[in-house]
Length: 103
Image (cartoon, rainbow, N blue to C red; front, side):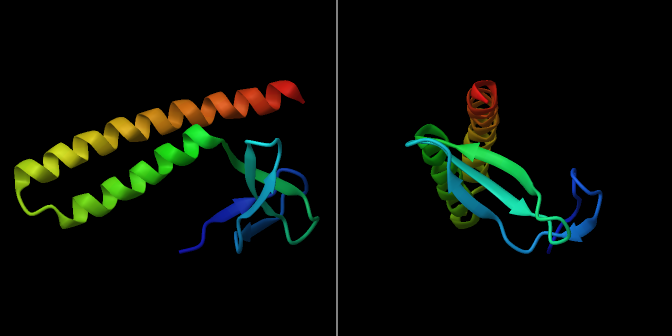
């Protein structure tokens, strides 16, 4: 399912076709998409080594959640996933502030 977005540069409404990545620093990557109307770049998020590791852990937890057979096990994995989601949000915010504060 594609998401509708409005370009912050030209206000054109469109669906995201592709998320692109570019290196900002040696350790940080920016994930963004491009407006087909004006070519303006719209930032999604920035990632560094810490965020990449947490996102991989999220992916593993979602897989484990699907494979869990007991309610108790599902709840334990779910709780860990929620905790990891909160950590990812904090780290994404930290990296964004680091990058955008340096601009």
